[in-house]
Length: 276
Image 1 (cartoon, one colour):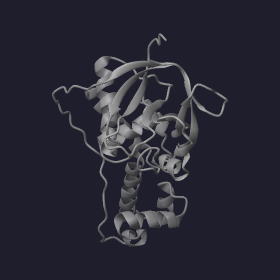
Image 2 (cartoon, rainbow, N blue to C red; image 1 turned 45 degrees about the horizontal axis):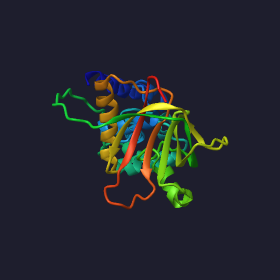
Image 3 (cartoon, helix red, strand yellow; image 1 turned 180 degrees about the vertical axis):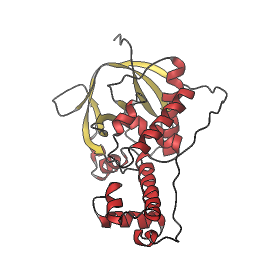
Image 4 (tube, rainbow, N blue to C red; image 1 turned 45 degrees about the vertical axis):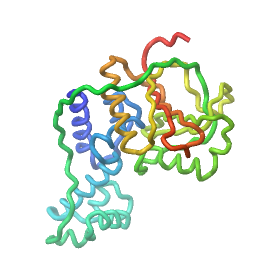
């Protein structure tokens, strides 16, 4: 547990050191041996704020401090904190702080500070965590594929919205929807569709593997983020299992999600022999 806190603190420190640069989500995730999808889930749970939102608020906080305490121009500060145009910076700054950058630069106004999080080691009693290990053959997922945008409040939120908006769920003939989340140049490639044993080159393929499987009865964001934290920061270390570094995360849902408290499954790939 303490090791996990140290890793998150190191990640926060790295974000601060590179706050004016393009931040590599995949490199941050690699520090915890997680996929980008898993890392974004856990970060949101531990810090209480989605990763992209945390970075945005820290940049706007620091930009306000510089406007009030330096002679740098608004243009140079906007470029320093990653805004391509002065108009985009002014809009984001005004929405967050409630005042325009030009007003802030004159001093005497109140702005917001989004501080770095501080972590405390808390010992809690062990709680039973139901899970099981399964082995599965190689398979493919045929369906809708897209990249999750950094600005999504929840990783792959936009992809799921498009999946339903374009009625791609109606193309599924089976009773389950498979979701595969794979690292893609620091982003997350999401494939949503039905499982097939065929492979024409158009599907997302998942190799033969062993999986740590956990069932859930809610898709409420904070509960799912908490469950990912329990799986990756509590269950895996306690069982001495290790996440397979190169395989994707998989989730399995019933096609009909209208039923109250429907059951679905999180699958984390684990290292080891797969005796199928």
